[in-house]
Length: 124
Image 1 (cartoon, rainbow, N blue to C red):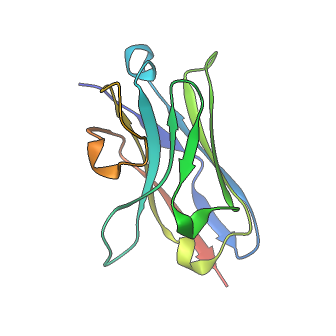
Image 2 (cartoon, helix red, strand yellow; image 1 turned 45 degrees about the vertical axis):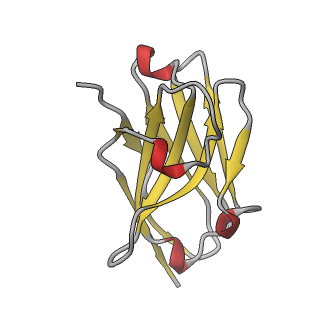
């Protein structure tokens, strides 16, 4: 059973920043695409940022300019930097991976390997 482990969530005031981390097992780190999703209460899970094996990134329009996805190959770790946090960013954040080589990493339905999530709560 593949296990992705997210960390770095917490309660932050609006305007602050957070960096989320996702520890990825070695074999899974060689996935073609990895991504971050979020799920707010009462809403569907949505993809926010993706990155391919070459480091090419893609973002949902709603987060462009504030979210940055990156990875550290030496640490097998995926990151999500979130700046200028807003109350509407409150959600459970999940990392995900997909081995299929091809297509675009912002094809959000492609992902089939998931972590358990880390909660982000933003107060105004």
